[in-house]
Length: 79
Image 1 (spheres, rainbow, N blue to C red):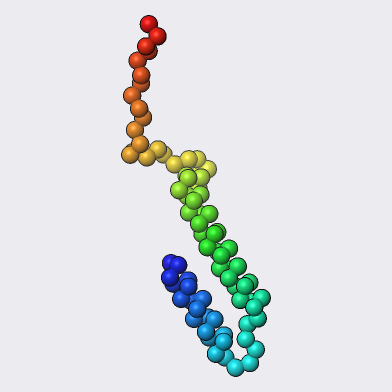
Image 2: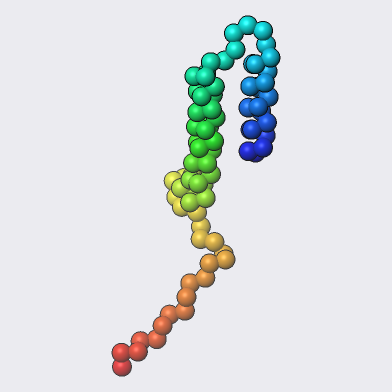
């Protein structure tokens, strides 16, 4: 995804520079980069929320993974 994003930004920058007339200002380029970063971070936040199990539709948590086993109970050694 990062390669596609970089390629898209490069293509858009080249296109805006090749057009006759007024090109993008430095502020516009920085604003576009900031907006792209916000979109990327928002996508990561959604993924993280789903991974942590807080994104269940009913508000509950995900069931525990089958790969995690509970350790065996230790015998009481105080006797």
